[in-house]
Amino acid sequence: MEASSSLIWIIIGMAIVTYIPRLIPMIYLSDKQLPSWLNEWLGYIPVTVLAALLFPILLVNDQQISFSQNPNLLAAIPTFIVGFLTKNIFITVLVGMGSIVGIRLLIG
Amino acid sequence: MPNTQISEHTRFKLAINLVFIGIMKGLPVFVGYLPIGFAYGVLAMQAGFTASETVLMSILVYAGSAQFIGVGMVAAATGITTIILTTFLVNLRHLLMSASLAQRLNGKDKRKLALFSYLITDESFAVNSVWLRNNNDIALRSLFAVNVTAYLGWISGSILGALVGSQPINVEKYGLDYALPGMFIILLIFQLENRKYVVLAIIAGVLSTILSQVLSHNLHIIITTVLISALGVVISRWKPAVR
Image 1 (cartoon, chains in turn blue, purple):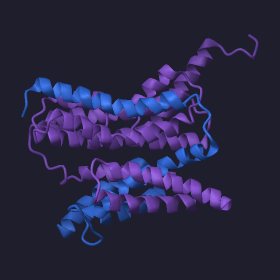
Image 2 (cartoon, rainbow over the protein chains, first blue to last red):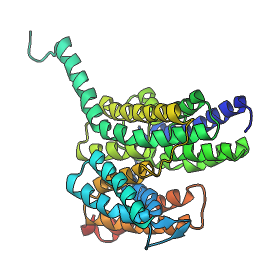
Image 3 (tube, rainbow over the protein chains, first blue to last red):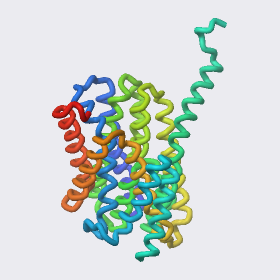
Image 4 (cartoon, rainbow over the protein chains, first blue to last red):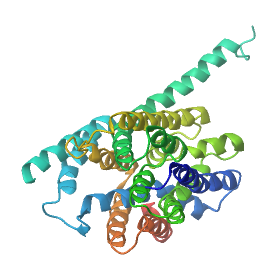
């Protein structure tokens, strides 16, 4: 590993390039009236970005799309059900963690 | 006292209330971040970070997946330029989230918004978006409280991970690695307002999965989000009834 002083620079660099995309739209768009189609487009971002983040985690196993013997996908079934029933973040995350442990024991 | 005037005391109580509501909204994210932050802390320590470097990265960068990737690249002795460029690409999706929130925070104080935007994450964004959609005039103070609560969860988890990280720990054994997908699952459920959103979620999920096989640096997430949100607009213009 490199010397720690360069690690500090890596952290600072990462912090800057992470902050810029968070900051710029907030500053430039928060006082503008956007056309209605653009507003509508921005309104779909929460659902599409979360689906885009989640599905690959569930469907890709060992770098390949897999529908069988895939622990992440199997554990998602009880997690989704409990999520729909309870609408509770904490309980759902706990059920997810419990499910993956159980499924790994079963299909190990 | 004329009843149009609110006393200092009442105003103070109101402000405290607004913060309190936000903390309650942020608390589940706080709890969810503990195991993920913990896993990050352990991995960073095992990659040779000191405890203070591990926690400093969580304070300054505050972006889950980028921190995991960053730790992995530092461990693999990747060059600083590659690490920073990758981080930029991996976190570029926040651009879309920030734009989406900005549209609902029209006219608020820019200095406060600048600070607020520092704490945008996938999860705090999801919670605040649902909240703003259901109620248009939520105080910025309350949204801030959500973000700060989540931030403290991430930092606390990282500290716990840094404390025990010098010992070898198997994060998979305790299901800690499933806290993130678990959180995404429930947050996605919150977004599913009607059938159209369900359809968009499924299309986005499938496209993102396919693209993830051919693209790197989380680009599949950005491309999918841009395209499928546009599809949502196209559908509602083409068939206004399914809006």
